[in-house]
Image 1 (cartoon, chains in turn green, purple):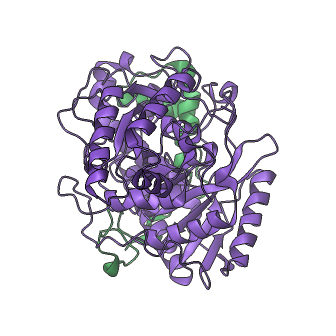
Image 2 (cartoon, chains in turn orange, green; image 1 turned 180 degrees about the vertical axis):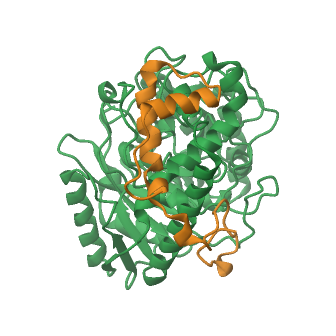
Amino acid sequence: MSPDAPELTVDEVRDRAKAARLSIPENRLEMVRQLMANALKPVRAMDPRALKTLEPAVMFDADPRREAGHGK
Amino acid sequence: MASDEPCYATIRELGQRYRRGDLSPVEFTGDLLRRIERLDKRLHSFLTVTADRAMADARAAETAIRRGDANPLLGIPVAYKDLYATRGILTTAGSAVLKDWVPEDDSTCVARLQSAGCVMLGKLVTHEFAFGIQFPGHRFPAACNPWNVDHMPGGSSSGSGAALAAGLIVGSLGSDTGGSIRGPASFCGIVGLKPTYGRVSRAGVVTLSWSLDHTGPMARTVEDCGFMLQALAGHDATDPASSRAPVDDYIGNIGGGIQGLRIGVPRAYFFDGVDAEVEKSFESALGTLRELGATVQDVEIPSIHAAPAFMVIMLSEAFSYHERDLRERPQLYGEVVREKLMAGGLFTSSEYVQAQRLRAKLRGDMIAALAKVDVLATPTTPKTAAAFSVVFDPSFPFARSNMAPFNMAGVPALALPCGFSPAGLPLSLQLAGRPFDEATVLRAGHAYEQATDWHRRRPPV
């Protein structure tokens, strides 16, 4: 995704909820959209091809002497 | 200088008074139980008061003190966020899902504080599953901020913040996934420490997000947090993320001063949308730290704007934890909380993994910044505590967080009082350090605290 990737829409949230078989009331869809859109902004702005060697951080090295700045 | 009233005494002061014989743990515990009965009708910080247990703990502590036991936590009255399992005592996580859960074992943190001689006064209100505030009509009311009961005390460790500020307890345990220790500390004018990921056990604490959850102490002074951390820190085989890194002495050099300490201020992101009164008190705190001998410089964390990806990770993991209950008995979740948790089921697997990759980048950049300075300083929260009338609007958004980046990075972060707004609400300074360097963070916080009197102000309860 590029930095100018389109923001998540209410229709997309509705489609995702349907695919996940989750029932979200219509009057809460905009709240959910806002929550997800803010969270996804940096993810959608990221170009994963530019960060090929970057591995996901799930847990950290518990030994501070081995700190390398990346997750295990 | 001694604290003004016994209910606001520090751990060190209480230990001295117990051992001099001018206050007994039994007498003090009784005083606090009566204070809880008198004040908590209005504050709603407690879910369960364990009066009989407290008096039994206090009698045991008194006997140990008479025997000459020098443990600094002996006879110190505490209460635990209701997310922490307590053997034989109702533990609800603030939810209807767990409304009848009586654990068979203590969480590791509770076991460690109890074996150090703490007196358990009860269980404290938490936001539902450490996530959603209690809207009107919830099965129990939201805790109120003792500085202004029309305002929220922050969350999710809301009861902990309120009870400490009101002088109902001396110490507490909070949990912090994106700021749930430091937020209530900030809004209630108390001190909270989120230690390094892996430093304090999460075992027996109801999960919100495995890779972001931290446990830690909340108290009214930095030194009190240090005393508690000393008892809490250390490897726990029952927590898979628990570290074997050696435990430092957090108290021995806490008064060592900060001459020559290098403090970095990451200006980008952390000052977006910050209220003028918050920024003013923060800059004033930097001035105090300079006067104490620290050097202050701006630092860059190039990937800091990736911080909102925190929410992808947190919600995805929370949804994994809650999925069965959300699908099978959604009616047991509070309104709004339910839909926000369900949002975690709408992210794709790729979005979750990319968020974790951004997190690795942010962590790397933060560690690099911390190679140039000893601690980072930011305002803890961009604003003061919001009024309930504002947050009870379901569309009220999650505020941009100055705290979540440090959960993303897993580094220690301390929140401590640094002023008051013109409306009389507390303001807070956040100090973060290198992984497992809680000792430096506490030393810096203690130096600032000793040079100011914000922590001695009392709310109008």
